[in-house]
Amino acid sequence: QEGAGMMARLCCVALLGAALLRSSEAFMPGCPSVIQPKARTVLCLRRGRTLLHNKALSPLRMAAEGEGLSDSDLAGLLKRVAQAKDNVSEIPIVILDAILPRQRLGFATADPVFRKLIDDAKARADGEGLGCFGMLGVDVQKQSMLRCGTEVEITKLNVSDKIVQIEVVGTKRFWLVGEPWSETEESYYLARVEYVSGEDSGQENPESDDQTRATAQALQAAVSDADAAENVETARALERLVLTWRRLVVDGGRERQPNQIETVLEDLGPMPPAEEPRNRALWVAALINPLPALGVSLEIRPAVLSATTTAAALEAVLHGIKTSIAHLDGSQPMW
Image 1 (tube, rainbow, N blue to C red):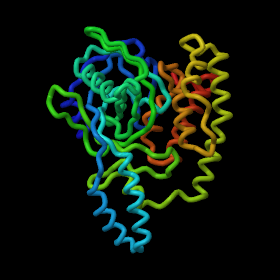
Image 2: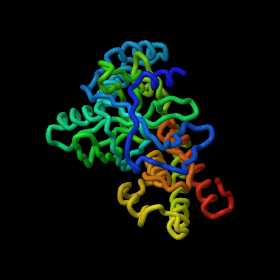
Image 3: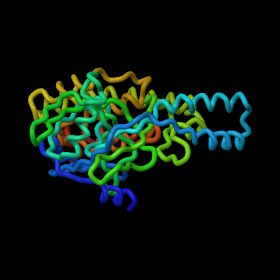
Image 4: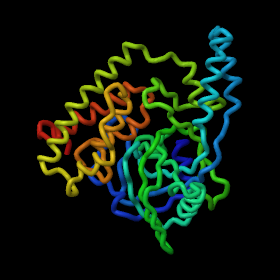
C-alpha cells in the first residue's frame, strides 16, 4: 500500500525505554488503531518554516463561482482562507504513538538522527522551552501512518553521549498536508501540517492537494443546530460514565502504578465542558487509554484522533468507555 511504501523508505530505529510499552492493549474493530509493539520504531522529520498556500485561492474562487456565491460571500471565504494559512507549518514528524493533547510520554533512544532533530528543535526554541515536533500513530489495519497527529512539546530532556532521554506532552492536533519528505537519506523527515484551530469546528477534511484542508472545510456546510445540540447531549452522558469507570479502576485495584489515575488526571486537567464535545471526547480517550497503559480498554485514540466529525469522535469514545466498563465489572470481559 501507499502508506506502507512510505513507511518502508523512511529511516526506522528501535527505541529504548520501558515507558513505551503498552502491553495488553487491544484495538477497536473497524477503526484506525494501534497495537503497541515491544520494540518501537521512530521516524524523524525536521521542523521548518511556516508555509503559505497561495495555490488555495484559485481552487476556492472556482468552487465559489460554481456554487453561485456573491462577491461578499467570496470575500468572507477568502478571509477565512487567509486566517487558515497561519495554521499551516512545516515541522518534523516522529511516527511513534497516537498521543492525544494533554497526554505525557517518556522514552529513550540512541538514534543519531533523532538526536539531531532534538538539537535543532532546542536551538529553534531560542531559550523559550526545549522545542517541539509532530507525532503520528499507525493505522494497524491499513499498515500505514495516520493522517492526523499531535504536536508535542519537550518538557524534559537528558542527552548523554549515546542516549537521548526525553519526555513530551501533547499540545495541539494537526492534519498532514501532502506526504512527509527528507532532504537527504541521513536527515530526519519533514511534513507540512495544518493545525486544527478549534476542537469543535464541525466537519474536518483530512484530504487536500492544491488547497489545504481548511480551504475545503470553508466550503462545507456548517454543522446544523440539531446536530450540535445532539453532540452536547452525548458529551454530557460521558460525565456519568467517567465516574463509573474511575471507580471500577481504582476500587478494583486495576492501576498498574501507585495512584496512576490520580497522576493521569493531574496531567489532563479538568474535564472540558459538554459544550466543547470534541474536546471532551479527546479528554476521555486520553483518560481510558493513558500512558503508560492500563490494559482495561480498547485502543480508541487513533479513531478519536482521526475522526473527521465530532459525532464520530464521540461515538468512538462511547464505545470505548462502555466496553471498558463492561469488562471491568465482569458483565462482558474482553480478554
